[in-house]
Image (cartoon, rainbow, N blue to C red; front, side, top):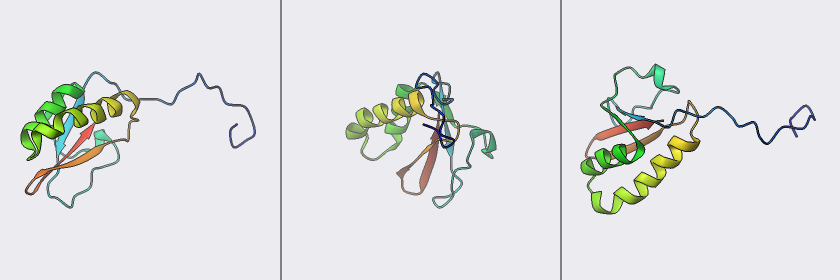
Length: 103
């Protein structure tokens, strides 16, 4: 039921992001927050690809790469399949490098 008391169709799903590619954006510093939408990102993406490609790109740059690839691929695939326009995932790559991944 909706807030107005009308039945809501279960077949209608909210708008989801395009799952063909994800973008990786570098943050200017560790404390910077990602903008709400990808269109508001101040810089171009540093990498783009499918969820497994993005996971591989990020895992190579993480200090725990052997243990990270499987769970990271699963998380990015879920984000790509069910994420909304404003969804993102920010990750520390080690040291002072932070990135934001968007579907």
